Image (cartoon, rainbow, N blue to C red; front, side, top):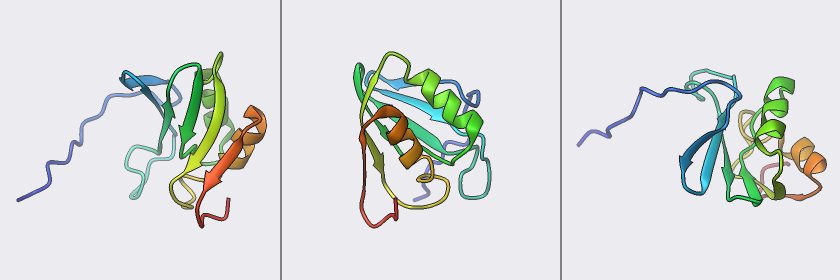
Length: 108
């Protein structure tokens, strides 16, 4: 049985999209063989939120996340793994938001 990969995705880099009632996504402009169109950064919740895998340390992407988080309180930055497309922005984002970063064995 083949895995039905969804290969069509409509998005704009740096724009926050609602993907479910409690989850929003911002895609970083870092397309490649491992990231496909770019790293998906997920914002969970409303009001008080967690950010999962904040992405690469890129000024435009960081500004896009700040815009997406306007009016929110970031309580946690979570890193699922330490790859360069997922974790480098974790510390700068947590410092900006005044929260902690949670990661296991990621070097963050």
